[in-house]
Image (cartoon, rainbow, N blue to C red; front, side, top):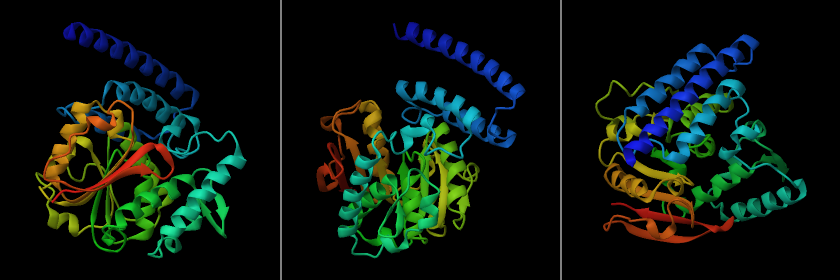
Length: 334
């Protein structure tokens, strides 16, 4: 049965890519392809690298389907409006149906985050940079977005236990980075930090294309710089700052204990439990610090499906502030 399903899936993908090739050719003739030839080569390189990776680094069935759609959207829409275009709202604030309610929700979250900010972090947020992103609103003379405020809330949950994430030279890996909202915020607050965006090819391509357009003063390490390295040592990472782009399969290259913080928001929940728990075992090796996880209680991986390594110290598991349907958890790994 598995072989039959695999055969059917391969036939389906063959038909899809044939259709996509035809669609791309028509779009090119009509002048509607929105990415350059170099960008297309980069995306193909990312896809090829990940396709060769073993379990658990590839996409689930859900993400295979979604990535195929993203591949089309990337070609036809580009990456300049990933937070505003309906095609990319999976990464960002959902479509706003009631502006008054949206402003009220943002104001409540802003007041909550402001009350938690004993570090002066909000003062470091660049209002002009935020204004370039999705659905900004003005609160107390500065521009804010739901994504920025949500990221700040998560970062403060980490900082209440270990504030070095805000000030010190630390390495932060965002597994399932989406459009890179954590990197966007962290690089404004702590320019000494190294933020590593780690994701599947289509999402990583979007992140690596979009962030440089809104963080113009940040140093970026393009995808592929790591490919010649056999190992990414802790010493090498500590000598870097800015934003680094890697595929999920590149987690193998990290020296054990080389990462200070791992963040995963709404990504474990989309995997099957076996895949999620294998990632937790990998994180146990590569991380010497804290794992912050924020997930839906009920999804592909449910709350009770997580198997955390026995040696981890649970700091907290609690409802997320913005929704009782989500929990946030912080663990110290060693």
